[in-house]
Image (tube, rainbow over all chains, first blue to last red):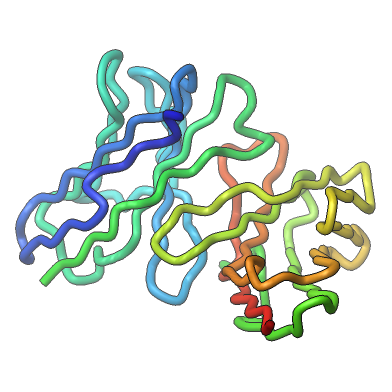
Length: 115
Length: 112
């Protein structure tokens, strides 16, 4: 059963390093969403991608954060020069085309800790 | 700006009784609502949804009620079971938007 696969599950980075979070969507799902959950908060939208296209990145911080979903391979969320405030759980979700309105399938998340 | 609010961070209920989880929203453009359930160290899993054209949707032990005039929805779990112990998030979106807005979650504990 290939659900949404995220890796790594846990990631520790020192301040100033780069973090790369990977997400493989459910087979057949071409839409990917990234959400972030800060401690004691709900999930906050970051970015919505289709294959090779960023559809909506209105929730992404303007600097240091980028996302891609290439034609082949997983979606990548990249955080450059991490700071302590980036420590959070990052969840990826996917949906089939046209079905995102009805909800997504979430992965188990990557827990990023910046030390 | 928190457009979806869950004002009760936690709730404890005896096994077999009813659990009622509440959620309020501020954006009148929201027209689709979901409840997700989340266990520790796992991702959220879909539980039940409701469209704004309805005021109730039922799935087994789970019922979601929507009061559009009050901008309020609730999730009823009857009867509650220990396996229901988890964090419950409500989420809402509009037809024209690309994202779901999530509440901060309610941690439900069902006591055997």
